Image 1 (cartoon, rainbow, N blue to C red):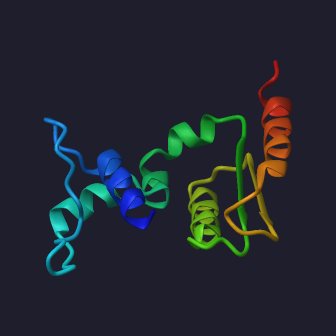
Image 2: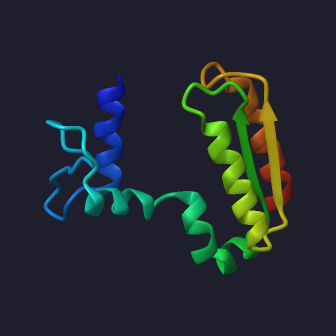
Length: 122
């Protein structure tokens, strides 16, 4: 699954115009390929927030949640994104860390949808 996940992320973040998928690491040595890794970093929400601050401030709501025991440490990324948003003056953010892992969190969906529906309704 880790290999499949890495390949899928590479297909999203660093595919060439002809569709060739470029991994950010040399598979023979594990060395980072800087020019490909930079393409991944360009899609990092924490790094994107300052570049898109005006658009983010115009949003009526942003909902961020993450399990505090996430196996991929996405809770740390969620917190970093929340801080990046605050640093750009984005105020309409709901941030909810919760006690769970990355799996079996379907019970969280109604909370997010209710929050967003309430703020996006005319």
